[in-house]
Image 1 (cartoon, helix red, strand yellow):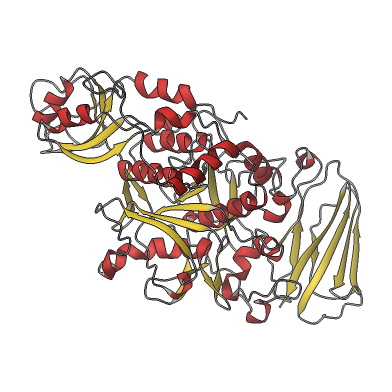
Image 2 (image 1 turned 135 degrees about the horizontal axis):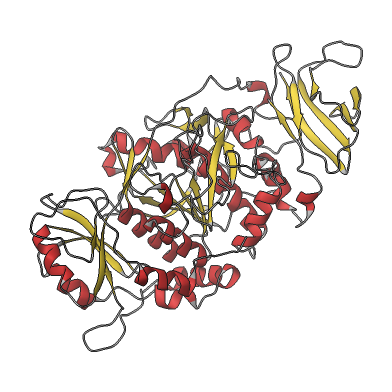
Length: 575
């Protein structure tokens, strides 16, 4: 696939060439302004939240607006990212501020400012119908569009995930960490193996776009938070002084899966990274966000040096399926712009289920956005995870990761489990950070190719699991073309608990042929062997017994599988 189908100049032309869309809203007066597009609210509302798009970035004297001013340290880091993973020239126009003269003229109508967007060359305002009439008459205003409201519905949870066994919190062969109950969710996507190699996300900056965060939680005591901003209240307090408890729940949980560190309890996928925390989402019965806060948040994160952005944004009945083409939703356009500047954007695909029509969210439809679906801790697809394809036929989600009964930090200072693609998303973003630490010169194309090419369904993706389960260790050493030979191995459930469970090994061979399974202790003693002939449909599995039919002791074992071009070892855990 092409790296950016709608980036750079193409994106800018797109923003200035969109025409207004029809609306069923009834005008309060004889007609609504031709420049205005309504999607969600009635024209009879007392006031509307509206994007106002400008024709250019000129000041009254004919000069261009100034570029944003950044501290030398931040500017240096941002330029380094640009030189490694994007074209620095793209920043020049996008970095210029919205025209202050145009902004002043719009606000002179009495409209109230909400957010500014350098990338979209627009401001969002709250305005009455009468004020919008006046704004529409300004020559430099090209169009207006109502600010979208997005929702992330709460998932419908399936049966309980496999038990975690405390004896396996610190398996033989891993590093000094005791992962506590976070071990399974990390091991399933091979993060533990990367931690074993000394990777932690160090030197990588991650932007989290979410609700508030309880950053005083013990799990964040060693987390390196380099910047915070509340785009709802317009300040830097993402904790709300501890007053709004509900607002902190979701962000605290998601951040802990990627940036938390409490040895013996919970370790985040990229615990050594730097973190920028943007409070953009409002908590009601569902997670709600207005797109101008999200756009402002990702622009802020990019200008402060973010390498990776993680977001659980979703939509509900605002944009239609035909709008999910990678080019239409404002958040998708902004996400692709961030990607064109070298930011790896990771977004949850949604929690609307995959029975029937495509249910993916914006901006997960972006062709430069890594959309993440959810699996349970046994590797099975979660019933609530949304599906693709995009309206223009691209596969979504791109990959899947644990999103059922994920172990997280809670707002009350304790720990618990949560479910949703909101959690598979930051786990995958953490993998991206680990890969960028190891390969700082990887651009989006290289990272995306490694992530999807090494996943478990790399050669036969679909629109529920995408390219399959993330496999971080395999992605680390990925060589283009390997996915055409083998998909690699995934064992599930892992850990497994005989006699109720056997571990089943999933993989594909190209070409098909006989396959051999050998199980060894960590000391190298063979305890089980099985050979499956070509064409045999039975699953390749192990029930925890040796070749004599005797149950072996609980602990760590090594599975060796070979045949048909496949030759790999896989660590398994018997309870």
